[in-house]
Length: 260
Image 1 (cartoon, rainbow, N blue to C red):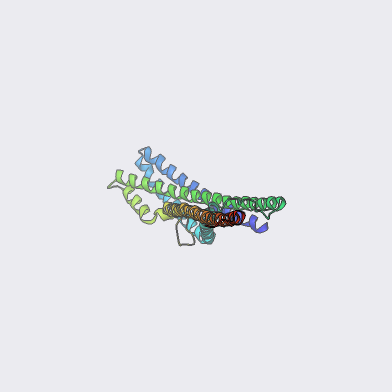
Image 2 (cartoon, rainbow, N blue to C red; image 1 turned 45 degrees about the vertical axis):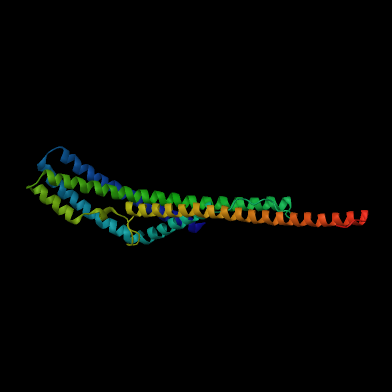
């Protein structure tokens, strides 16, 4: 219980830090856009230089955040993939089997209750893991999107003020600030961005196709078993009918003293 609370607290603190970081990036974007929309070039250059220092501070803060929480983010990504595979496994679970002939009503009810509780616990755990992963990825994408908006705004301001000091300032900022400034990394191995989401969705679709194929194969195997049982039953009935016919013929021959 204590470990679960500690894990949830660390994950929540990481998500809140990312959301707070995204809000600061959003503030930088709003301040630059407010001055750029006012067409006051005398104020724009000082604002760009001031916000450039803020962006460099946020860049360092993001790197420190990745260093501090990178391993935790990596473990969360691995857990997301495990949760994804678990969902596929839950979909592949066979339905409740019928009550066996030698199984009593009490044993059957106990078995159904055990399976129901286990399934409920598994779905609850997987739902919590997927919810946490979804919120984490959404927060990371939100932070990365704010940085992209800043970069697009700086490029627009640069193009609108060519040949001026503002263009040089924008070029200086763009040379040091890129999309990785607000990107959260999983221990330096993978950035949590749209590419990561696309890979996860691709994995989901791939496993989804495997689920349907496996379920179809399972149903096909079940049909084959039923067909084999039907053939076996027909052969048994044919043998019984043949034996009964021989017994009936023997009885008639003995009763009426006739031969074939």
